[in-house]
Image (tube, rainbow, N blue to C red; front, side, top):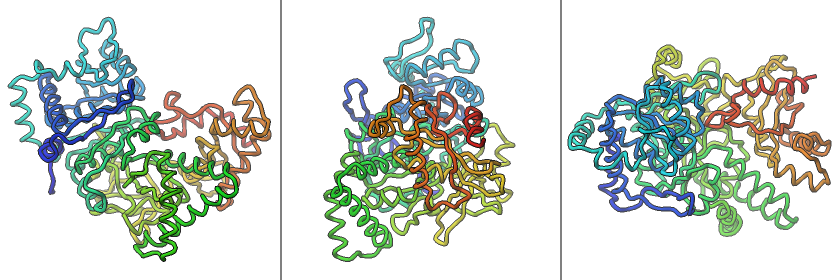
Length: 603
């Protein structure tokens, strides 16, 4: 395979780009952004590599990192690669029980921790000798050490010259020369929506293949651009996208907390950003609210602008056809006025590509985003496939699909509708789980995705649902809950929703209202209640959601339609176990927690 080992990537780029910017880092106290050059990046990576060697990291061993997004995530990755060691990233929100499981299974002896919360959890484990950890390295200099901690060190002390001898330098150079494609780059643990987490083993060959096929599919992009990193770097989507952007020589602005992404976008105004569909659902809901709250003239102007954009982009540009002069002029006018203002409000007016994947995104939202000239690229992939299996091409993408199968990848559909994948991006194995690994592949080497769907004539993948999430009502009809949930969450009054219906007479839903929007509506109707629970029981509020839900599913088949719903006053969260670290719903946990509420809906 052409290309290069990831351990070479940063140093190759440093020779090309030298003192040009590669990373933008936000100071959370001053809100100012500082720059890191390619030369600085390369030097920092080598300092980490040599210090890791000094602290006893061997080839084929595993290094852990437990933090929110930071520049050090990159330094640790590429420093470990130089030692032919693998990195095991953990979400900053991962529970103590989960990190204990991961650290023990992956036999992690060196663990990097980010902020105070991660340090406190990790040090408690270190103190009890419940894991193989022998050294904690703290990334945030503001972390306060435990009074009995005599061994943990801060990152800057870790990479100081005293931890880099001539022998360490020589050893790292030898390891770099000995690097192999089949070396493990990452072990990324799945979120475990239905059971025990599994460590997905991804090799340098997997990443090399991913870079190659994205160069083919995304050949229309400028060679270099500024991307925003805000999804957790333990997420394969952010991990693979960031590595690809570094491969292209791009700059990466690091958002340290997804809760401040709107501020970061306004401050940096990037040209690219990968995200999950929920981000764009919120954008769409905000525009719909703007239209609803506007007077007749402004509201109709918005609607006409969207309709014009849909006709121009989808009927002509996407088909690589020249639009009529009048339509081109009209689109250009809206691009300079309505679209520009909308994108500038979000902070994405410089956009060249915004990949989105991870869950369903409603067709009407995709059409809207493309209509207002936001370059959304919808796609589909898994941790086990090093992210992308399919994504939209530049032209002739099919709305209704999750994209066209990537170049040099093979997809087929099993008899039960399961999507099967064979490509050099598919994982090596599940770490220390030979039975699970064997079960994940067909006899002829196709990976079982667990997703149901079918292929179009143009090799587009239509995703129906996760096989394990498909519901079958008591009258034998199958329901794909994620599609219904995506429709619901496109509404400005609905923050989250989970569809219920397995072995039930009809479909129902647990709904988390958007608190701010619902309170605003309640005030307009003169509804006042002391608590959210009381507010959501009010007849006027119930009627509002009844109307919204009916409108959202007007074109849904009768057996799939939501007949009853419950409004919940507490959001699903990671802390209560209802969401995974990637914000996917743990359906069984939610069903168990709200068992009584669900039973009432079926009384």
